[in-house]
Each structure stands twice: as C-alpha cells, then as structure tokens.
Amino acid sequence: MKRRTFLSGTSVVAISMLARPWRLALASEQLTDAHASTLLRMVKDIFPHDMLNDDPYLAVVSQLKGASADPDMSAMLVSGMADLDAAGEGRWADRDSMQRVADLGAIETTPFFITVRVTALFGLYGNPGIWSAFGYEGASYEQGGYLFRGFDDLDWLPEPLS
Image (tube, rainbow, N blue to C red; front, side, top):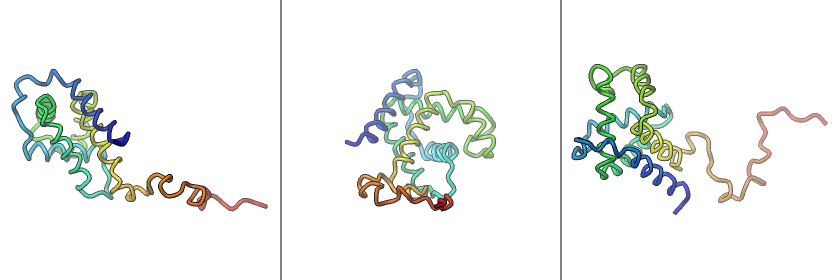
C-alpha cells in the first residue's frame, strides 16, 4: 500500500469519526442521484479547473458514495447537503456560483465540508491521469531522476553572462 493511498483512506475514516453527532434520524438515508449531483457541484466549486472534464470529479463523488456505506458517513453527508439547501432558497446546486461559494465559506469548518474537501484533495491531485493537465510529469525517481532530465531546464531565465 502506498503512503498516499493510506493517508487518503485514513483521513476519510478519521473525519467520519468526528461526524458521530450527525447520526440522529438520518442514519437510514442513502445517497441519491440528487445528492451525487450536489456533491459533484460542491467538489467542482471547491477545486475549479476549467481544463478538467467531469471524470476526475465523478471519481471523487464515487469515493464519497463508497464511504457512505457507513451509516454515520451517510448521515453526515445527507445532513450537510440538507443544511446547504436550507441556507437559501431552493437547491444549493441550482444557485449562482457566487452564492454557492459564499454558502460553502459559511460551512468550511464543519465535518461535512472538511470530509468532502479532503476526499476531493486526495482524489483529484493524487490521480495520475490528470497530472499532465497541470504540467506535472510525475515523480522523477521512476524516470531516472532530474540529473539528466530537467534539473537545468532554465529556459525562463536569461542566458548567463560569461
């Protein structure tokens, strides 16, 4: 098991442990397609990247849906999305982008927001399939290190004077 995989898994578990108070009456609710659509909009608003299609974001939503097999996690996610909807008029995901971001700022310290943000952080930026979109070539070790591969690529600096 790689360190990154271990950390992403344990962070979701640790955050779900913080979410125990969310159990209440919502423990039996499951994530619906509407919930998945709200989570997709939320992840895209937290980490907006125009150069990415929906696939990496959908992978994060899939991770959250998988984690929602735990009743506590499911209750916390459903309750958090219900709170977002209740913060204004209508569904949160249908509001304009400025209002959605303001609503997210209001809940950024809640276990719900932290869980979604951490899962998205590791789910997106730990995905080797999208690294090229950001110009990241991956770890240098597997490609022989930087000695013969880029350590002196300083095309953004002027040539030194002799």
